[in-house]
Amino acid sequence: MGDEEWMSCLRKFAVVGITKKLSGFAKGTALWLTSVSNEVGQMLISVLTAQEGPALDTMAADLIRRYSNAGVAPPQLLYIDCQCCREGTGQSKLKQRFGGWPDLVVKLDIYHFMRRLASGCTKDAHPLYPIFMSRLSSCILEWDSGDVALLRQAKREQRRTSGERQMIIMIELLLNELMGVKGRDFLGVPLLDHERMKHIWQIQKKHVKCIQDEAGLNRWNQDREAASLAVRPPSLLSYSGDLVHCVNNNSVKVLGRKLVPSFQPPTVYTGELIGIDYLYRQAGRALQHVQPDSE
Image (cartoon, rainbow, N blue to C red; front, side, top):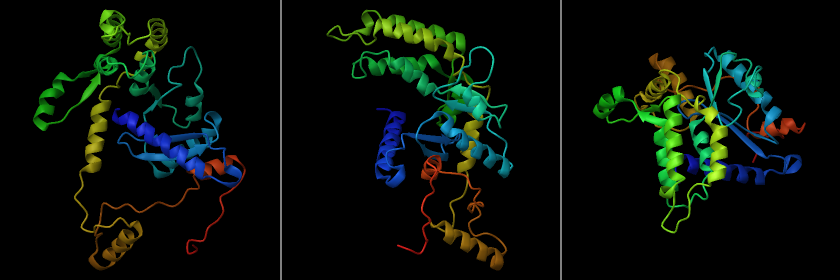
């Protein structure tokens, strides 16, 4: 099981655990978890809802407002698992939901594109299944020749999509090869369901253009990730945000500088709904107000 599949299982397990703990009016109503993360894997928001669709309008509006209030440039790309390609004219419901970011480009995530093709296999326990997934990954992603020398020197790895036309050719060659004798195990059991995979590929072929990298995007994300980690270890080793904030305030008064300059205190609460708050608002209820000093 790959890292992404493992994390997906963990998320599903967490949703089941959380929803089973809900009691009162909201019990049994939370059926959907939606999470939004940025390019370095940091979770921006995670909400429980009774369903997908219009139930997420408030989340999108609050997220857009959060960017606006912070004076931060809006995202340029949104990678999702559905509603990526819009045939004909008009905007998709997802584009309308994020209408506050008119220049946002919506693309299908490569992982979900691969999972769609994988559903054409007879079973994931087939001996050839790992080989098929590995070959499929090679059809989609290629090593950047210009970066290889730099990556060897820096002992890092980087890949990019191989281009729309080349990708289609390589995937079709792979599918045709595995639909023949090479796609059977030692008992003659085929890896691919011929008719099902043929139908899936005809539908998913249009998404190949959707999963192509934007020019320079991967390098930009790598740079942002490196920049986010390029800080010196703090001199105060504490996981208590209140303690670090208090120490910084006193340090400014006494020393004229922050003792932990990398620490960013929480901003003023904007009223944005998060987690179970979001679910209760859908049900027309509010969470019980709890006194911080009470048990």
